[in-house]
Image (cartoon, rainbow over all chains, first blue to last red; front, side, top):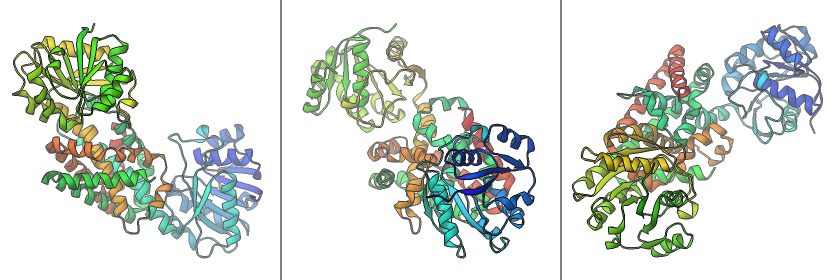
Length: 286
Length: 286
């Protein structure tokens, strides 16, 4: 059973923050939800819609009331914001985030969190193509995975507490080290984005490219490249914040692409078929 | 208005051939539908289901009755089959196919088609993940594009006739040269498959890969790699039959991937964002 929090602070009341707030309200997981952010007008809007109870556009001592702080801002802003927030928090408060990269955030905040306050990295694998609290809805995290990356010094009571919270939102919680998180998500999330962006750019770069040819593209290509329409700034930040892993995974794709190109060039049909079969077997195992 | 054919021969009564046959029946586009193939038992099954009226498991003089022949076999078999069929056809017959590659087929059959018989390459951009006539249904081609690749010597009456046929099935018909078809489809169809296969294999090749990590993969990755479960033999044949274009497009992706890797390695945020923005703009233009 999830502990009921007194006051959940949501920093960055966007799509994810808004969805969390709606679930907290609907499932009665907190006495109060306070929104924080830079844009007073948008925070006031979220309060008018009843997504949050009150709000502040500065990090001030109102944060001392919060027993759970969820930072839902763009990934690059998370670590600086956590550093700004923690001095205002009371002992016993838990701070978490929803960023797609974990190690660089954990590293940046670790030494800045005062004794008595816990920072536990989080990453719910959920989202939509929309952004902003206006697009938020209840139930986004139902049956989704939420990764938590407790540090070596995280108190297990705090981690259990945060895990119960995400479970109460319907998520399956998986714990792993920040490094492991970043290595795994480089492969299954960051790399596919890098490849989709590069694939679309490759097609544009071809001689005589005419965008009208894209209308011949059927389901496969459309599904495949949908993620190439993702937010460039967000993905720039993810690429930068998980740089070593992303570069390593790109290297692996370069290797498998040239392996395939060599087989096609050599007309080695058995090898081509073997490579495709291996891929199909893996894909089918999902 | 589509001409009504006397006898449409469908060679290879699989998913596509079955869908064509069902549409022909439903829209009354032929007096008779005759199925041809190697497997008597399966042809008899298709006839029992009323998909075809009669069938032959050999190419014989019954083909003289056909005024339209549609070859719907796997792509590599198309050219040899067309060469086997044409000696049996009557003057005035039109032969077409539904293969995903055009130039090598057109080149292989061109000199083998007798005077009076027309071969016009075709490629309806439609399909499902299933195969076999059991999965066929009426209406597959509705609002889909069908490419026709008439040769320099194709008689325009024949091309018009075939175009009307596909239009009667609900397709939008686009005419282009076989070379142009293969260049375009290398980019928007063959390349995405090569990349999807290579991406999945790259992930499998990573050190410490454990297939359980794939369960963390969310929508993007799943959509993205769905086509990596496509038929290895079919895609091997496409890669071989459109080899030069496929190799050229792979080279372009290798270039855009290393361009991106260089920008990430250099920490050149403006450049990373520019590359992602370019891709997003293109993708959104579809």
